[in-house]
Image (cartoon, rainbow, N blue to C red; front, side, top):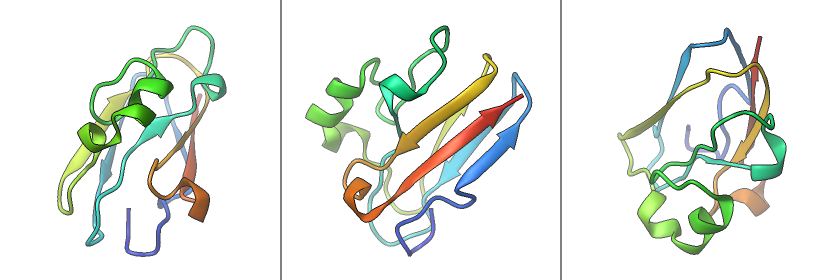
Length: 101
């Protein structure tokens, strides 16, 4: 997560069972929050802050913020496409995709 309100890369392609680590390299706080309707049906929901539902992550955004220099990681055990976003910067286009093969 660099300073320009993006995830880099915007789309990451990994193998099943691999872990993605998001590191906040900016000077402001961000979240990593899955779109509940944009992950495979069998997949576990993920969000910084440990939320199990998108609504909970949105309602308690402060608990999911990743401070500058901190990180969040998630292991993807199910193949498919996962859409995610940063709650505070979603309207600025801070969205990403993990493609798990």
